[in-house]
Amino acid sequence: MNYFNLQTILRPHIQSLTPYSSARDEYTGKEGVFLDANENPLGSTTEADAYNRYPDPHQWAIKEKLAPIKGVQPEQIFLGNGSDEPIDLLVRATCKPGSDNILIMPPTYGMYEVSAAVNDVPIVKVPLTADFQVDTDAVLAAITEHTKLIWLCSPNNPSGNLLQAGAIQTILEAATQSLVIVDEAYIDFADTLSWTGKLADYPNLVVLQTFSKAWGLAGLRLGMCFASVELIQVLNKIKPPYNISAPTQALALEALDHEVEKNDMVRQILAERQYLAENLRTLPGVQVVHPSDANFLLVQFGTGGSNIEPDAKIVFEHLIDQQVIVRDRSKVTLCAGCLRISVGTRVENERLLTVLRHMNNAPVTTDLPLGTGGEATKPELVSNA
Image 1 (cartoon, rainbow, N blue to C red):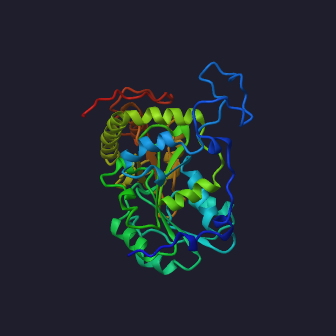
Image 2: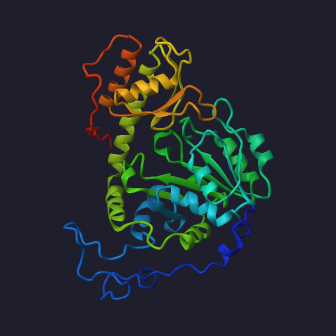
Image 3: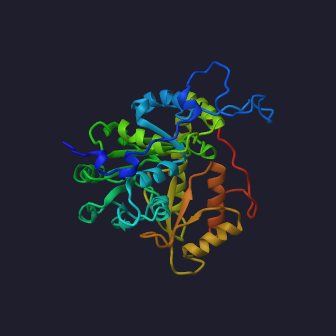
């Protein structure tokens, strides 16, 4: 039995806070003469759909369509401006500046630390093990009465691997005075079930997901947070009144009608991930291609500094010169000599491999020209449904 009580970890002024009541909170109907929100009654200056009216502040249409897909209730969903918004709101709702702390496990997503620093919240770091798994004993030893948030990124960024479910469960059961957040931004690319199915078992569990990756909607900036109804009510109380724009809501609703297409794209990305990993392992300068449950690969390059085994910095700069853009993670904890490479289309992946083969004086097996960029093209979707 998990005896977590949300009220014990909320900051006292958050518990008593009276939220801002917007015009669309006070009247939720769709019909009428709207003279309550100081909007422009003449329409918009765009030729597109009129955006002169404020959007639904709680995005109920999206939540009602999303809930059955995720196996939760609409009231258990918070939608934010990317996952970064709920990350920040969780810190502000629970952590007293200069006193309470968050616990992170580097290497991990950098915004947990940034949001804490912005809010003057101390950060406790317990590094992952050498194989990028949770050091469970060290985590449990680091938790104190001031630890309000424990962040677990699974699949992890930048290593790409799932964290062991047993470790997450142990922390959920032990940390009954903290919120345990499982960030599943890359869950669609992993062969496992989401932790959203465990929300009823663990009232201290929070799950983050996003429309940016598998759904292909990074430009919309729309993140998902799943938690207890009680916690979602708190996030709604402290968020900006209209945090999700009307165009974003409309496009998200449209996207949710195309889950089959999303799944097709995921299958193609997984096939390309395997293709890219297999080919990278054949290159002389590649030391390790770490296993991935995400849509990217963490790749360790040689550290000799020669043309035969160039180090990550040399490879990174050469790729940039050839307009192939990857992320240099070589200064991140446990990632010495590593570049993070997103899985692209076959054309983009071949371009990367060609540049690397050319660098290592290995045979070039593609006609793609060196030194030119190219726009990404959307792959043809083939439905397996």
